[in-house]
Image (cartoon, rainbow, N blue to C red; front, side):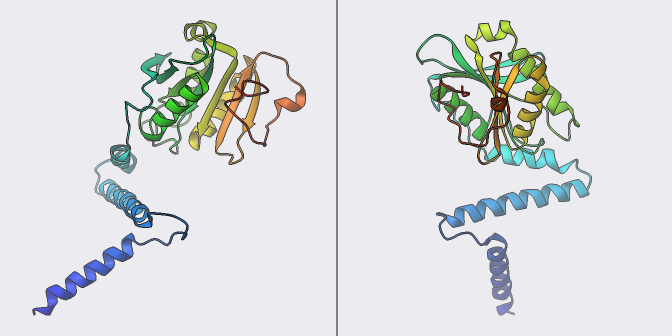
Length: 252
């Protein structure tokens, strides 16, 4: 009988190690941290699915809360960037304004975060950090759109939120308010946000000519709005490298 607790402990230890262990490339550093993070996400997903099975609501909002709790948002990161929460035609957005720069008109950038149309936030984690970096390094006004998510809403609501914010942002009054050069305005997004960026860019072509640039990874889409006439070949998707920091050529 004394061996029984030892056997149970051994079995639980082996089971836990098997659950956590995930084969990873040898080149990756701190592999156990990645394994623990992966195991944590799987545990959250399984727990939320079980809660849904017992009738405690949809699993996505539950997992979203856990994921957002793990995201690190540093409000002091790049303190030179002025951050404000605004509403564009009823759509919540977070505006990032570079306080330095060369003076004069600034670049403008609309950003749609990723997350499978069900996760993510314009105001937290990586989305907040990348918006601050872009605003600081590009001397740009970055508008990150807090579009509504599934399952609280269904398609095409996320797309319509992004389109509404884009049309509002592209108005002459708003561009003037933020001192944005109307010939250097772009829309971007990662993952699901890249899909939204491409769809918004196609829809607003009736208001502006568009040059769409596709990054080599095809996960980040940047569509530049411009009223200037362009050769036909420049209006097609470019699959070469693209330097957002450049002030010449088809960039920002």
